[in-house]
Length: 227
Image 1 (cartoon, rainbow, N blue to C red):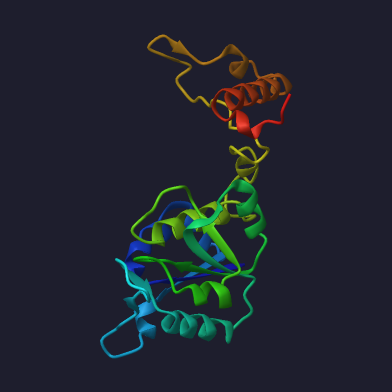
Image 2: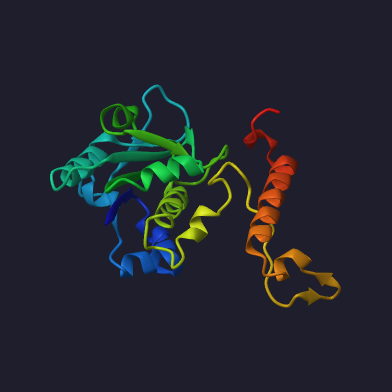
């Protein structure tokens, strides 16, 4: 079983993603546990303070080191963690290979940033991985944490009804996924390719591979080795 402990100052933002579809079924099957930790429960005073102005001035507030350290240390006193991940725009860009590696871990802490981010000492003292989901900035790290967790959970064995489905996703073999079709075979003159109706599995797989290469070459040539 994989356990996720997500530290956030906005836990309600994460209620939805983990309460539906594949992520909920993974928890119902006992394959995954997701625990949300409200950073305000670790505030430094009775007013619930978890942020302060940045030393040196400038706009924006900074999440303080003390509440985060208290929360992480409390969790680490209960079990050993394989990774403490901070979601941040200046982290390593998330890709399928990273999700594959993280899916092999047992206990993961994900720290959600907010405002101008977290005190650098949190990153120096506790964080083992810094991950970004793209070159843009969100209001907080909660949605990014949900994206990361989803990308990990769906490839954990037993989560999907057909595990081969995850293996044929885009990026698993550095190729984009080929086109897919379902019924009806013809919709307003747009027909499904004959090969997919042939029942010839080897030929179908050959067609899919060729289509995957073509789509990757057209849309993400950077994924292909130089010819």
